[in-house]
Length: 313
Image (cartoon, one colour):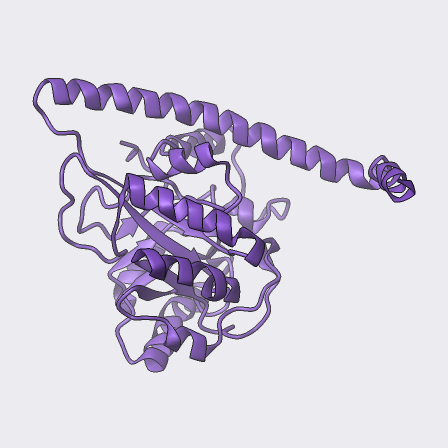
């Protein structure tokens, strides 16, 4: 009882107020996004129902998800999410080129940074369900502990990466050092893009065709550099529907966490958060930000990319 009272007193100290305020702001932001996404889902449901009444199949929809970490305590939640994913969609590989079937829902599962917790906790659950996945590896920090993005974890070792089932897990590049590419010079960016692919191919003895941008930040000309480096598809952190064109080179993804609310996860999985790029674009027009402005963290930079198009379906 005494310890509980002391804890209550500690939480009332000014030191904890910013933490409590940030948590409250985060919950409010998530709740507002969820409400808007519910509206988008309802509109899509009505639209698809009208098409079916007219004898027309709704368009195929594919959503690419990206995770970072899946801790031991989150494994059960992650497994439940994968059960939902299998129930509502057909999981496909990130390098799929075949056309999607009209009226069907598809999903792609990806992991950025190749953390050890993904190897220990996520991949076994995916194997049980036969769900294909792509792990984007930072080629220059394999087996090291990192601290970016609030994930102080060890990344997979080369042996762990080589030990993953190649028929179920694809490996993609996530650069050499996970540096924000928009802050680097042209030679540095090209090295991050091409050298990481080279190292992974030497390690795995197979072609590396997929790439994801650190923090989601990139410029249009970097897409061309990725093509020149030999990649066949690159992934962003903007939640457009994926594979609207099966031959597309640039593919959007939606961020998910094992701790997402179940309704929140379902709406993300069904593409109801695809309105967010328009909101990001509007925010940038209303509040222009210079790349050199240090007030903004790399995580915030992911929504400030130059490549916001009107592709929301």
